[in-house]
Image 1 (cartoon, helix red, strand yellow):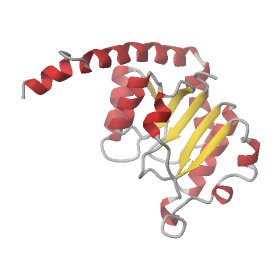
Image 2: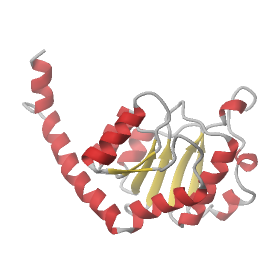
Image 3: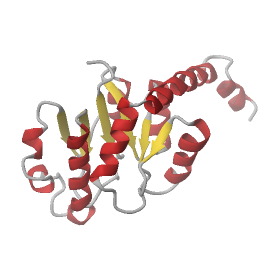
Length: 192
C-alpha cells in the first residue's frame, strides 16, 4: 500500500552493536508497522562476519514473526530508489546530507539518528529549523525498543506526523523551485 513502510538505512558505514540491533528489532515489531531495514554486521564483528548473520543478531523468532510486514536486507539497499518509492512513508536515517536531500525531494518525514561527522548539525536543522523530522532521543547513547516504537508511531500515526508531511510538501516544492533552470541553486553557482 502507498505510504505504509518505514525505511531504515544508515549509510554504507552505519553499523550498530548486537544489543542495539536487538532493541531496534523489538521496537519495529512493537510498532506494528511495515518496515524495510538495511542491516550491517556490528562493528566488532565486521572482519569475522562481513555479511550480518541475522538469525543470531535479532531476538529469537523476529524474522519469522515479522515476515508478513517486514523485510531485512543484509548490508545494503538501493537507498535513492527506495526513498522515492510510493510505498515508503518514513525514513529512519543517520542524517547524512545526501540522505536528507533524498528524503526532502521525496516528501518523506525523517526519524533522525545521527552517527558521526556533521550529521548532528543536519539533525538540528531538520528537527528544530525546518520541522520536517523528529529526533530519536538518546541517539548518542543506547536507544531502547520503546523509543524506536514511539517515534515510528509518532511519525506514522499521529497529528504531529501529519504536520511533518504537510511541511515536507512545502519543502519539496521549494527544493524543486531551487533546482529548476533559473532557480536559486543555478543562480548561486553562476555567482561563483
